[in-house]
Image (cartoon, rainbow, N blue to C red; front, side, top):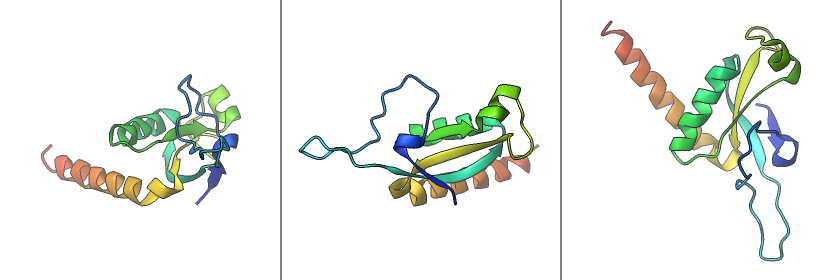
Length: 110
């Protein structure tokens, strides 16, 4: 799995980064972010990140800058990534697994 720290991850939004923990002395601890899933393009990654955020899990979607600039959705530059703080990784995987099971059961009804 890939990982980044909150200092090196750009969320691409104007939201305040409330995901960093602070100590009483004002020092900030770095939050280690882990890739929870990889998608074909940025749009699906953003949808998944929003899904996790509705469950109370801080999540970020990102794509390599060159891939985003050219609108790529395939190949190494086209991959989108969803990242969560490492202490939320297991919970995020469980939510995504339950969502996949739900999606597969709905495919049978079509």
